[in-house]
Image 1 (spheres, rainbow, N blue to C red):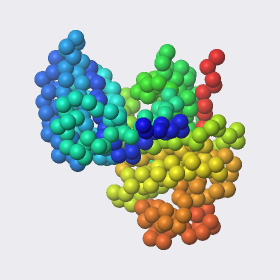
Image 2: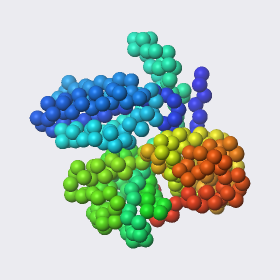
Image 3: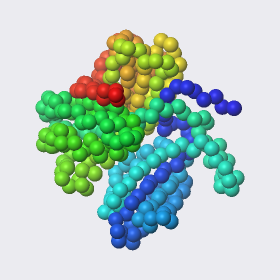
Length: 373
C-alpha cells in the first residue's frame, strides 16, 4: 500500500495524467455557433503535444449546459498550451456563445473499466501515485507590467486600497492577498477558500477594487478597458500566473514567519523547467528540520517564474534554501535556466546572497482576512 504523506502539497509535476473539465452554460440560440467554434478548437488542440483525447457532452436535463473534457499525458503540456497566445486566439470565438464557464483540473489517481485495459502501457502507469493532502485553499496570481518610470506612483495606488469583504458566499472566502513589484512588474497573489472564480468575480465587483484598477489603467503597458468585457477578459487571461506547486512543512507554522516573493526570469522556453527545479528543491527541503521555509508556492507562466515563500527569520539567514537551491550542482542548473545566468552559477554564500537580493521583490501590501467569528 502506498503511504500518504500528511504534508500539505499540490503539484503539476507529479507525472500523472491530467483530466480537464470545462463546464459551460450557453446563451439561447448559440448552439450552432458554439459547435462551429468547438470544431475549430478541437482540430487545433488535437495537434498539441501531450493531448490525448477530448469529449463534448450536452446535458440531458438542461440543453444549454455543456461539458468539455480533455485528457493529457501530464499537466505541464496542458499548462503550456492553456497559457499560450495560440490558446487565447483559439478560444476567442467561444466567448460570445457562453454565458458562464468553469474550468477544473484533476490528476488521474485510479482507473477501472475497459478503457484501462485497452490503454497503452505508458498511459496505464501514469497515475497519481498517492492522494495529496490539501488545506482547502486555492492559490492563484496575476502579473502585469507598468510603464517604466511609473513604479512609485503605481506602488502608492496599490498600497492604498480598501480591502473588500472577505466573505464571498457560504462556501467561498478570501483568505489573503499579497502584492509585490520587481522593477515595473506587478504580482498579485491571492489565497481563496472555496471557489476561485467566484472570489475573483466578487473582488472585481467591489467599488474600492474597481477604483484602484481604474487608477492604474493609465500606467499599464498593455491597454485595457474594464467597461469592455472582451478587453477585460483578454487582459486578465494574459495576466494569469497559475500556481504549479505548493508545499508546506509538517507541523505548526512558526510565529515569526514573514512573506517574501522571489522573481526568476527564465531563458526563452525554460520557464517550465525552472519551475520544476524549484518545486523539487522545495519538496526536498520540506523534510529538513533546519528548513526556515514554512511554505512555498511556485507560480509559472511562459518564462516568468515567481516563488512565494513564508520564511522564519531573515530571508538571507539560509540564502541557498531561500533561493531554492541546495548544492553546487543545483546552483549551476538554476544559473543555466535564468535569462541572466551563466553556466557556473553562484559559487559561494556571498554570490548566492547577491542573487537572492536581486530576485527579492518589493512588498507593496500583504493582507490577511480576519478569522470568522
